[in-house]
Length: 189
Image 1 (tube, rainbow, N blue to C red):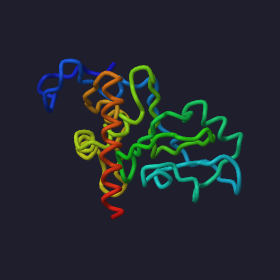
Image 2 (image 1 turned 60 degrees about the horizontal axis):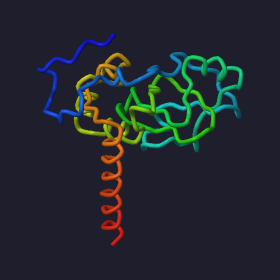
Image 3 (image 1 turned 180 degrees about the horizontal axis):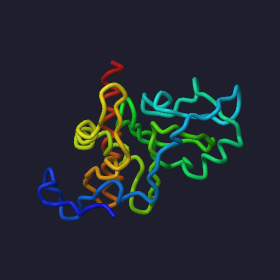
Image 4 (image 1 turned 135 degrees about the vertical axis):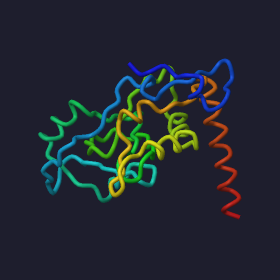
């Protein structure tokens, strides 16, 4: 179990209907991709790493491939599915990416997989939360190493976030999308 959040860890006050939680408390599954380099093949199942999601979305255009057999073995432990959230944890850390495809793929150790109950958590809110200065600061403070930086799973699980009720999460996301739409309009002028 994750440690309780102390008052001194809470960075600011939140509304009474919200609560402070650790990311790991929100997850029904929190894991990362395989820790050993697979045998690559010319065609097969896409095998994604940080480089395939560093722009904030899944990019299958320059991916490596593994055999169906190897994918089936890896998929038993780390099974990304549509609606899950991926988080980069090696190199450029803390980039959240929503799995928005039914296409099967496997992950390398550089990417964390977070599954959660859609009854309590909106994936778009979770993505915005991880992009927030609060979480990005925790990611930077807890990223270890010099050359190949690593935000380890335990530190990701222990990241502290504010959690509003689901209906409020959806309103926040709608407002963010509305604001970005306005920004896009201004930029096109």
